[in-house]
Amino acid sequence: MRTPRIGVALPIIAPYAGPEAVVTIAQATERLGFHAVSAADRLLIPVGPHWNNDAGLPETHVWESLEMLTWAAACTRRIRVTTGIVNSIFQPPIVLARRLATLDQLSKGRLDVGVGQGGGTRLPPFYIPEEFTASGVPPARRGAGFVEHVAAMRACWAPDPVKFEGEYYRIPPSKVGPKPWGTTIPLLFGAITRRTIERAARIGDGFITTAVNWDDTRTQVGWYRDAGGTGTVVVNTIPIPPGAEISEAAFVDAALADLERARELEADEVHIVLNLLPLTADEQVELLEALAARL
View 1 (cartoon, rainbow, N blue to C red):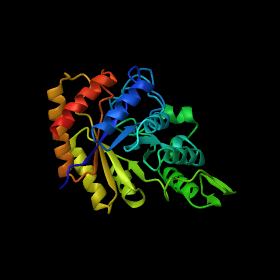
View 2: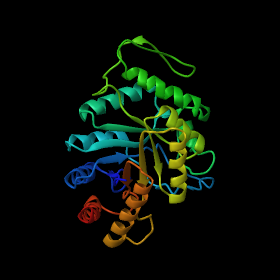
View 3: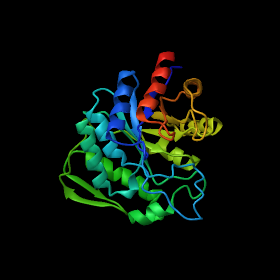
């Protein structure tokens, strides 16, 4: 079993996000020999007594993931850029397909795309209703609508003329571009339930999860493999959870332990999340340098 490739989550959460912070983390990731940077998607954070935030999301706004990844790609030459994840059904498939293909062209084929259908909670209904209200998309679009959205995006990346006829989305015969740098763009599905993980195995190019609990992660990866999944498995890890004491030694030990657990699961990539902590980009780089020195 080989050690998973290492990715680093970009600083996308206020107040530590910003153009200089993205450049600092992206260039350090490349300099240290790591594999990728990633950025997640969150339209909003609800307010009010009904919001219990069971997933422990940051209570400040998140910068737009595709623009952050474009900025990271512009200041690097080797590392891959990953959406981990973008909630695709909040955008029309032709719009998102063109945005992703543009980034893939600008980065010269370095884009990997994690897609999802809402998320934001780890308990039913597994999505934030306010995001669907704000984006004008009904929650019922999840499931079959998400599957159709993926098919419509892939149609946009195929040779012209593009035509798509579905229950939820239609694209009249037309020329659509740009096309991806290569033949297509890998789509990895973000999922936590057995049903959605098995869907990732059937029609996705891989699977993304977050290791909140490693026993759960082991079960999820098992579901993916048992369903015939052979694509890339990406595990997001949080070596130091928010509120915990931050030290170089604690981070390195925890990150190495996470890498070993991921290796045992035969995961392909581990993306290290530091952007939930009250750390500047330079402080995050110091931790990453300490980890690189131990690898």
